[in-house]
Length: 307
Image (cartoon, rainbow, N blue to C red; front, side):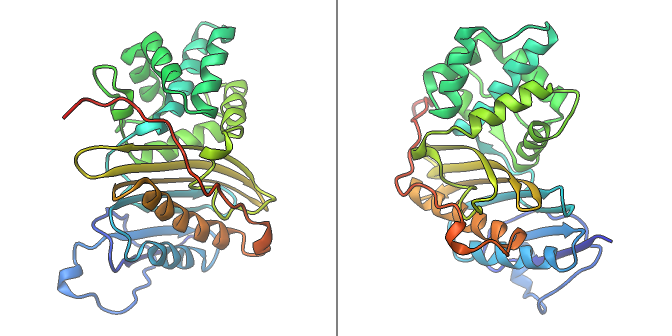
């Protein structure tokens, strides 16, 4: 049986939520809350959807900015969404898509990556090297990136124009779709390609190990890619996507944010969400064994148009 809950959040701006099968409502909401955001969760495990919905909502209460959240746990058939289709400037999150496109394109011609491509891909993911990303983006071209997006079913992702890959428009639905392709057998990415992407995401430099891994138990494997970008409007975009396996669970998490006053503020918002997700999914893990991210988060600045 699937258990579902969709409660009104107290503070957040706006979210599209799916229909409710088994509603749990915490009292009547005032008329002004009619358009308030909602965290919508479903689960095959009794009580888990309601707990996740409550805890994610609490983690975001009072936080400024616009936050989108995606969670999927294959083991318990659990999902949570918040602003599933809201678009954000990708910043460095798009680098996973660039790597997936490179591997997908190589598969079509039945070839291995060259040593040059391996070097560029490694730098792009593990160190978030922007020069390497630009080189691969130009090599592939937007047409091939769009081809991969179509094959992957990432229908709402729009590649950045004019070479500005960091302004690719992304959303939680498509990021979760990409993480699903990376973590399960499919016809888009080969098993070797999936393993390679996970290997690089598992070897991210320490200063960039922040975000969705926060609070993950030591027994869980962690693969992450983060990104941030400051612009003249809507402040800092700060994002984190991760895959996690262990402790009897197999799950993916995407948290996208903008409107942050500083990078660290966005990081704190993401980590507040991540901590409750890991805790609710694997509550038996001792606190001392939970993953503590770097206290000095860093990312590489990416090029954007002036003005």
